Length: 377
Ligand SMILES: *Cc1c(COP(=O)(O)O)cnc(C)c1O
Image (tube, rainbow, N blue to C red; front, side):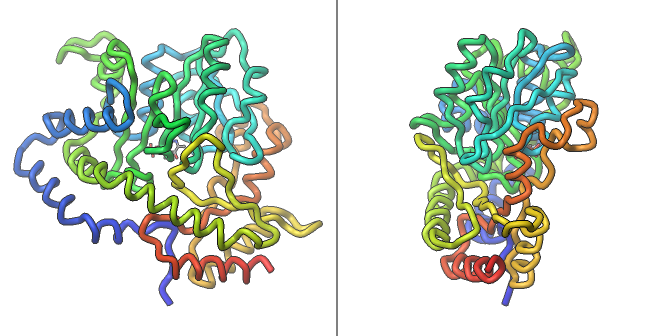
């Protein structure tokens, strides 16, 4: 029996590869590889999709976060609040601009920032909050915006895992001041390489983001700030233009896959299945369960053993994320020892992401579930 991968981009390519290849060949023949009409038209299409006035393409989701921070002139002496249960890029960009990441623990059911603890973490130095719509599941943006408005802080949404997700009927990335997207191949809208974008509803901010993206320059060879070179390649824009047309269908298929898992796993003991935020529409970048260890057994070792047994059965699962950010070597200087964020610490020792992609078949899902039951019982 063949392995069931966490995701299978080859199946996607089999379905739409001819269109993707044609679009790439057109760019190759055009001779315009940096900027140009393909990048511009993708930016406009993506802004339309998200529901913002502007979209600024860039080199990665990481750069999208970085550019948003730069556009707000956030730097040394400033604090930015975020979650410790996310990919390193979220906090890394805060550090990169010279600001300090301030972590707030996660909600035990959604694994997103715990909004009940947010206000208490805001200080006179807090300039922004960077929520993550983790695993594709949107955060309660109504509550977040109300806290942010009350304290006059900027909201930079990390939408890397949530392209197409909605809160209260509105696309994520259109509600905060900035929406930051990643087009890394494993994201819901993935390029064939790196890529990212920032969405905003403010022409002046859009112009500033473009300035920082292009070496701090508004007019070529005239530089007003230290910027970066972070452009979206024309080839990637062409790929994304083709794929954007399929995004809603793929996200719909992901939600069918998630519903099937929910049903198959409903009565399985010793696991906790995902619970999407009420009022949100998740796009299921991951289907992440928690494996609960028997009394007296170390949580992470138990989870790792379950993962190993799944592997033996040909089911490849993933751990997002095994070590919370406050416990990473790079953040030792923040002095946030084990115990600082108890919910994050418990959850990170239990999480296991099952194979999730639009093309996974019901038979494969059945195999995943049989293997999981075998592994945990
Ligand atoms: C993938 C990801 C990023 C970074 O995106 P890249 O395009 O890989 O730079 C940032 N935040 C989160 C939550 C992510 O999952």
